[in-house]
Length: 198
Image (cartoon, rainbow, N blue to C red; front, side):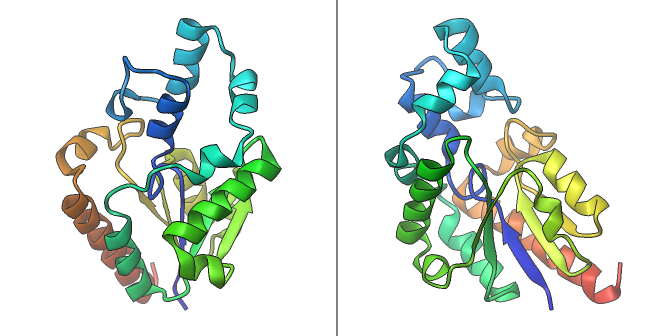
């Protein structure tokens, strides 16, 4: 049975934009963030706030539950459901665990009510590869996590974003329809690979 595991922040939830708004950073946008810790480096070198302090500032469920979804959420949800009606959100644990989990759960309740109702959510650290198997597909914006998942015999789909190796592609397809088409195309490719046994 094919299983789909969907990342949350950076694929269906726009953490970056919410982060920038939270700290009042107006001279950068989502599309200016070009590596994973870029937002924390901006805070550190331009605002004097280190990463530990930043995470303490995010110790608020309202921060997490008010993250905007990406505009393609509804379309990619349909694509994932066609492949795996029981697809699961697999999301990293924030450093502020209890408030982060509460806030992320409230976000899922609002934007993915069926996922929430059926408890198809897994909160993990960075070890998403533990869910990997030959019939598992992970969709994520973090290339390291995707690479690890594939090393453990799973199938990975890297979501094009400005901060990963598919940044050039992101700037060509960062619309609701085009991103959805890309994810659907990659899902079909991975499903075919699984069916053919490779």
